[in-house]
Length: 289
Image (cartoon, rainbow, N blue to C red; front, side, top):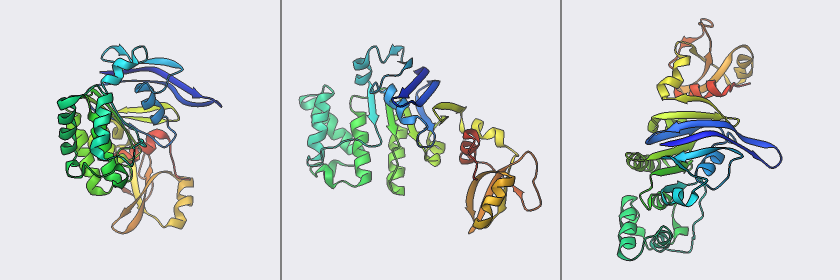
């Protein structure tokens, strides 16, 4: 169990990244959803003991992670959005070096590296330099690094950004397998990733948790209150002035505007089934203007 209690963080210059964030996270995939600048990366860096909070504490299985950071790091797998790789080094060589930093040696090290590279389908290219890897291959290699030591807590930041559909599908499948016995914290602004993977979701906005729950619970406040209408691009500003415009979709080749309303706003509108994407915009207070 991961427990975050009243975490606050303000950067020099007065930028308040987090404002009293609290949550409890059980094993499985838990999603952090929010726009850029919402505080997701700051929260993950604090949980990973890479950054100290101004106030609050983080507990993992009862352990205060900032009082005992080394103990947490032995049980942590962390895959940031941008992770440094020694591009001149072969994949296998680099992973063996990283395994030694995690306490592996000899045959145990070699076996762990082989198993992980086979798991992420990089064993056949283990002697290639990391600089020659594609974006998807680098993300898979990062997931192998994050899994070393059989971590109980895995933190991943924007894991599918820049991946093609096949690589995205493969990476999400790996995460799903990892999460069977672990807490996996998945941070992203890609709503379909969260909707597909996460048992529970917290929506962060301006450093605060503005909503939390299952996908169904987050969508529930919009039930029967979302309506769609075909719209031309040049008419969007006028529509946004008279209605709370949640989203724009392409439906059968036409652009549709989805609005929030307590009742049917007119004959040009039809009831629409809301998704997590509309719920995300609703809970963050976003509206097209």
